[in-house]
Length: 491
Image (tube, rainbow, N blue to C red; front, side, top):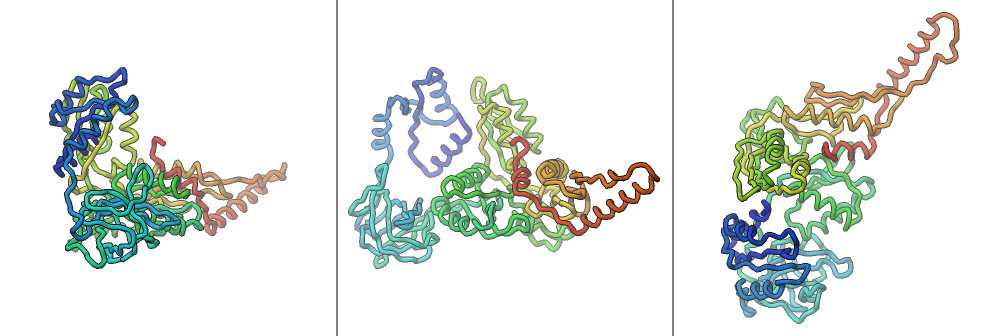
């Protein structure tokens, strides 16, 4: 049993949905049906007698599952005679047909030629085609109450379509919009920049199209002195961030850079004003801060008992507190910790999967904000601050993060004719440093014999030249350096 299985089960129960327990992969030699039946009863609290055994690979039990769906799940309600009320649950962009809307019709019906209106922004369009999803889109005469299908209405303005919006008729609207979806708030933030500045407009268009079928994704314009124009984006978590990055690269053929992921911190200023900061560039003046708070989560981990020691050690490294341990069955344990979200988004999940050899599952939910000793850590290259690498961190973690960034930049930045200092700083306090040594020309090569002062004079002249170059020189940081620093310690 995995942590996300329980989380999704509880969500379904909150909405009073019918639950059908299914035991899959019964064809495997390692299948233990009796143990799973016990877990359905003890951990999920469901009646094990209602279960269905199946093997999707072998086709065993598939007819029984389809019959159970028809027999146990209530039929949709609604009337074709009522005003149209259809909920948008997804959408995709077609370069030839415009935005293709995926919806469920709760009331009324819709057909080609109807004038529909989006209740969120009152945009009106004429329907060109409706149909069902039968592996591929299949055209139908109309969609009526209780049906799920698609609507094509020549929607070229992508921003007009919003997941969770209600579609109704222009001349016979419904009384009020459908409840839609619960508004989710992002908890992890990162900036996305194109590797080539010429690709900025392509990135903007791609984000607009991507948002069609990801209502939880938010973004706004952002800029960086080092990386140029980009977008500040909000994500539900690290997995969501990875999915967005992968889809942008695969579906839209983009080459992008993500800044260091951050969370939304809460600061109380000395004038009692409360502000939320998710971008290090907006960190308030330290002299004005009365209290800094960071979000905490309750992490639920399910893992084999033999990995308990290493996982507990990992959680304590990440400032985990208030642990709770339960044994769900022979050799299986459920461990929960309260820990800062900022520690989890850095490299916790990768290390958790490593120490449990892939057998552990991890889920979490937000609980509250708690006071913490937060500081702004800056990275300076040749005395110049690199804003894209700034991070808001706990003071106890600042030096380790700064040392890691300095060491990686040292390996990536090309050498110059003068020394380059790479420093991690908190305000005016330097907490870490690496130095890139300079190229050196042997200016005394032609001096043989004679007084030593001749060589010293040439060396002093060279030293003065390097000092002058350092004062007026600027260091160009390659993109590979940013990518190296933004990787976690285990990448």
